[in-house]
Image 1 (cartoon, rainbow, N blue to C red):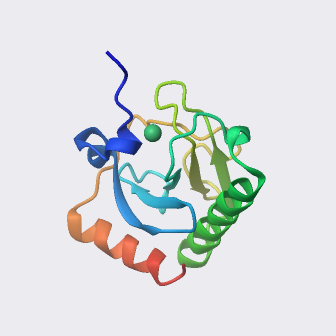
Image 2 (tube, helix red, strand yellow; image 1 turned 60 degrees about the vertical axis):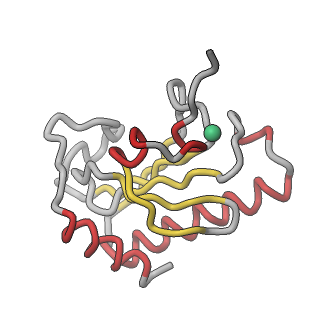
Length: 139
Ligand SMILES: [Zn+2]
C-alpha cells in the first residue's frame, strides 16, 4: 500500500491542519490552523516532489519567489520582528516550507520555532477568515 500524500490528495488530514489562502506561481499558500505564531503559513509546491533540489531550475526559482511573496505578505500584515523558515518533511515528504513569524518576547523568540506548540492555539472560523483576509490583501 503506497503512502497517501496529504498535500496531493488535499484530504481531511490536511484541512484539519491548514486552510487554503490562495494559489501562487507553482505552489499553494495555506494558513496553519495552529496560530501560536500569528500569521504562520505553509507554502506547498503544487507538484509532488520530495526534495527541493529535484525541481528544475525554473521551478526552483518560481517556488522561492512564492516563498518570498508569502513571507513579504506576512511581514506587511503582522509586522513580526523576524520570519523563520522551516523545511523538514520526514513524515509529509512533499516539498513545503513553513513560514513562521516570530515576535520579540513572544513564544520561542531566539530559539527554533516549535512545530506543534503545547498550547495548540486554535482560532474560530471568523478569526481565521480575518487573518486570511489580511494576508490576501498583501499578496
Ligand atoms: Zn504530494
